[in-house]
Image 1 (spheres, rainbow, N blue to C red):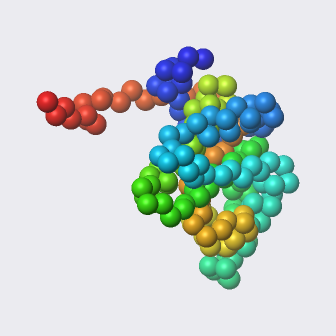
Image 2 (cartoon, one colour; image 1 turned 135 degrees about the vertical axis):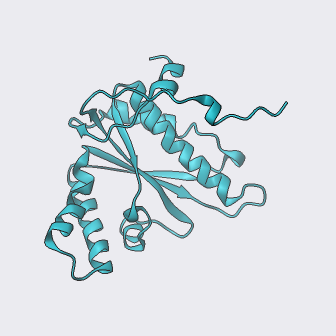
Image 3 (cartoon, rainbow, N blue to C red; image 1 turned 90 degrees about the vertical axis):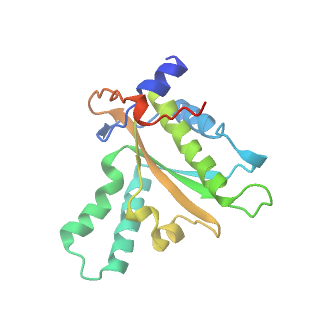
Length: 184
């Protein structure tokens, strides 16, 4: 696939099916991620890959966090949290690793980690895989951060759900004039 085609036509895939990306595909996804723009060459990212039992473990971690917030959590809601990561055969948690730096502010480091996540999604599309970037309350919950081993200065940028596209989607055609101002 041509790079420009991937950039212009990529779409999110909310329905993802097995199989997960192969080891070779996963390596390409991660290689694309680490090529993100990065002021100061800080490499302000890391990635946690979950599949199989790891997805079940992640779901239990979500349910534990939800129970901390609401000890009266209904069984159906508990099950929903347990099943959230199971919406795809693989989930990559993209973590921003923020450091004090005299020339690179926190905002640039977060954007760089977001660009790394974007690289994963673009590389997935280029390889015929489906991807969906999700966040939600579990991306910001302290119990989830602790359970995933996040340290000080680390935060979740997003969960990238990966698999085979459940159905074909077409990229919406947006009117560029709504987003562009010329300043001549």
